[in-house]
Length: 278
Ligand code: MF3
Ligand code: CO
Image (tube, rainbow, N blue to C red; front, side, top):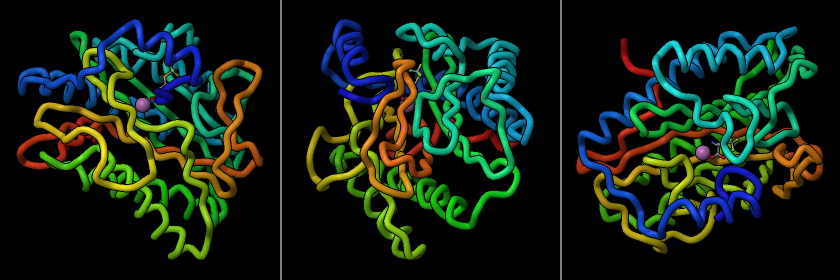
């Protein structure tokens, strides 16, 4: 189980916290998860708008915490296995789990992944966006769009009776197709992936971002998955910084990350963390 934080600590922590069954939500519970997802969506929209040159990632964290608390929700990342902030802010070669810092000041051309989670009445939402700071290179814009396409590909594979890794294969296929269009070769990060979500942030099952379809449990109405592809502009291999959290591309290439929490329903995927219409 290597969704979420670093492999060892998280795996042990999660094993104590929950069983191996995939949690199935009632429609009332899904409505509450949608409320949590909407808080996350609004927070990410605010943070995206604020992510400009000269702003620190600690500033963004402060804004996010304010947005979440103003909505009457709880920031789920803060204190999670000792994590010290309400968002992850992963700049450039950082892939995920970057810790916000007052000394990390955004500059024109940076590419930052912002990951955010909120709890409403005990139910979790988790989503991430990659934001272009000022004007980025065409290659970086294409990389982020490819990862977003990979997320959309995964979402489109969510349907009742599909197998779990049908999503994985769809994520991979969309990423490979995007790379083909871009005349690029992207690394699909395999050491981290998506996860079940609901009454906790990280639950069964682990959702790989690549691999053959047709494996793993069948999707049932009421299951919710956080789908979160991570791409690099180079090799997919990762390393973790000495802070014990920040995951970076081992070859120093640019990295991006997009995520939504998605419910399985009889009517197809329900993206709980998309921005509400009004
Ligand atoms: N969306 C992130 C993930 O599933 C959440 C990390 S929260 C942290 O990996 F607190 F562990 F940083
Ligand atoms: Co997640």
